[in-house]
Each structure stands twice: as structure tokens, then as C-alpha cells.
Length: 295
Image (cartoon, rainbow, N blue to C red; front, top):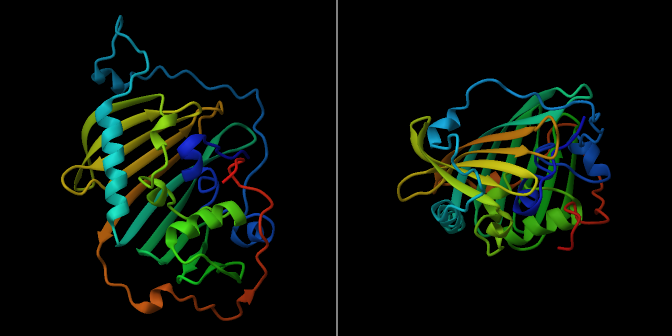
């Protein structure tokens, strides 16, 4: 099986998360389920679809230019969403994800997960990821983080930086751990996220559940991604689809977000209590950044 690898800001957001909710180096890889690394045979070529595309409704017909464009509204709304996400002090996200893995025969298969992320800035986080008959996740209390895998019966603890933003960086750079739903932490934090975008389009408003969300399409060198952002004064992400365009099978990662703002969390929410028979193991640091670049 093959994994999904993305460049630029999408790499930071999804490169590890798309293979598994948390993917660790060394002993952590065993604890949380590991990654898929087998290469897909090059003989598997994409099939040309003869199904009429609903994108024809966008007005791109014969004779019209298909050149890449940057829609200022799309990038502006992306920045506005990032600023709003960074302003949230306490929130809970329930996210349903479907992540493609490419089998050796070239077929895409989707693995489903449900993530519950609870955040209290600046220094509290808990993520519980359910899928494949297992529950695993991470708990952070402002002093140390704990990763756990209920099915394996393992957990590991380590000292952590004093803020959530520093924790996200530390987990990625030093431990090869991608914070679940890490996009919610990277957007709007001062990085030049828009520099990698080669095209951006606004596709109009659509319904996701009971929410009205504006649909945007973005393209980078090796990845296409779609984002639906809630309309109104709370520009929360409703849904995202990321497609790896480097592989013939074009595997996708699909996530739908449901938000609860300003919840009241009990102090015990951010305290990890190992289950009966759980064993503490040593977490070993990674030898380089998971993104292949200096952090």
C-alpha cells in the first residue's frame, strides 16, 4: 500500500495524518498502528471517466480559458478562516474522516475514523480517534503529553512545551507525531500558507447538513484540495477533501467537521488515566523532521 504525501502547507497539515490519525517513528509507530509504505506498481493508470462533470455548470465550456487563476475571494476567505480559528479559546470538534490507501492492485480503499478533539488554549488538548476497532489518541495538560493505544494496551508520556502551538511543532519536529486535525492549528498562524497555491476558485454556496457553506477549490503542485467554509460571522471549516495528484490512483482524504464553541470542560478531561493492564513504554525521538525540511 502507498501513502499520501503533500507539499507546502498541505504537507504540514496532512502528510502524516492522512496515513493514520497519528503516525509515529520507532516504537510509537507500533503503538499507534504504523504507516503504509509499499509502492504502487506503475502499471496502474488512471481511467478516463465518461461521466459528464457537474463542474460544467461553472461556465468553463469549449473555447473558454482553463488557465490557472487565483481568485482573490478564495484566498481572502482562507485567511479570514485562519484568523477566526486562531481566535477560538475553547472548542470541541467532532470529525468524520475517510482516508484512501492504495492497494497493490491499484485499487483505492477508504479507512474510516472518528476524531473528537477538545482544546482549551493556550495549554490543554485531548484527541480520541476511533477506527479499525481501536481507540487511540493524545492528551496534553500543559506540562507533558501522553499518547495511548487502547487495543495495544500501551501508552507513553513525555515532557512537553508550555503552549499548544509549541506542542504541535515539537510533536512534528522531534517525535514524528502529527497532531490530529493539525490543520486547525496551522491555519492563520503567520506562515505564508498561500504561497504554494497555484490556483484558487470560489464555486458557490452548498448545504452540508443544516449549514450553508461556501465551496472553494485550490490547487498546489502535487495536490488538489477543496474546502467548504461556513457562511456568516463564524467562518468555520465545514468540510475538506484533499487529493494526491502525484499518484495514478489519486487517493483522497475526506473530513467533515462539526463544531461546539465555548464548551465547559472538566479538569479531568485533560488528565490521562491508563486502563486496566495498560503498560507504559518509552517514546523515542525521531532522527529528522517528518516533512523532510528544517523546522
